[in-house]
Image (tube, rainbow, N blue to C red; front, side, top):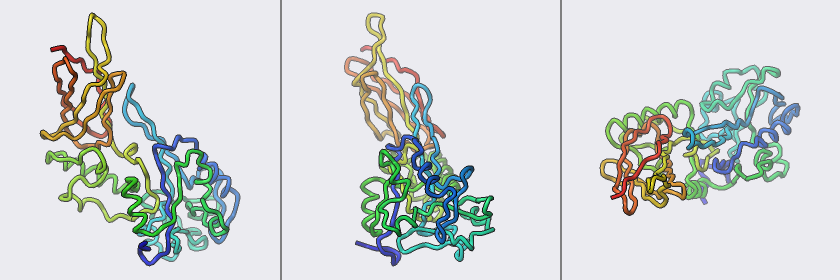
Length: 328
């Protein structure tokens, strides 16, 4: 398989947001390995407090009663085209296996190195006056370990490590729909992109393309990627919006859940998504880009008049009141 960039098989982390439950075992394992433990020449000791080389952030979507929480573990992305390496080539060393390390001597006193990471995952240790970050437990891997401590400690295997060539991993990423977290700047550009696309009346359809560039016309708005080697599965739980609601009808003075009704999401006469309501008459349509503008919802149930509703997706998910269907 292809090696890419002249490297041997390189190591990457895959994080599945559908599996992470926020147990923080990864953070605890990282602290256990590095807090008060010096692993020079890889890295000096980590602070016990106020320093996280893996940071699990809570993200909530929707509003009652349609809420969803996911947890997003963030760490050094060990980028192939690392901004920190460009800014400080003497302080940042990328190994043949793809792991990016900071030279402990060159990182000493170099607080600007922390600001060079567009993902904010290089931290300043004020006790040692040095910059530090995740090493992917390179000292353990070099000693024969198969996995970093965060991977080993994850009870649901939300974090996994793979070692393969670039072509093989590209195929894996396509099948599993893996994507990197955007940097702060890229997220801002993406928001601008979605806003411009919405103004022109087109937007990426929900599904596999969600979260990607909405139109080739505006592709230049997205900066050159740093090509992270930490990729995420089910990233839509963090980046995208959903539309949720419930259908009901009245019979003999009693309100009933409209289970098995067909719900279609339309835009400009094109059907983007179709779902059926569940036992409770509820539905959810996910993977909708934020700030993507107006959509039309159509509702169908045998014996009832079709209903329509226009919704607008701005920066968050849309949670609708109960929609009443009328008998023919």
